[in-house]
Image (cartoon, rainbow, N blue to C red):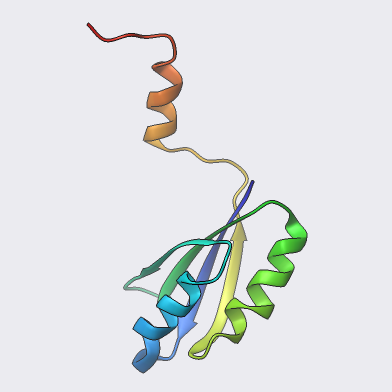
Length: 94
């Protein structure tokens, strides 16, 4: 599975509708509105790199209200949930 983080600049008056339209696209697992340099952050998960080329410019980039995107492909995940589950293998509670 390939994970990409898409930073999205959106027209300020369309952020809720733009976020929902992006969230409804197959392959987009989460969309966050946020403060800072970008308006929305989308987490995209696909099986192949070719799907990113189709999904991001052709679908996300065409959503009304999207002004610009900046995509970052994740190489590896480091989360506390992953670490905790790795150390819990074979451990049974009392």
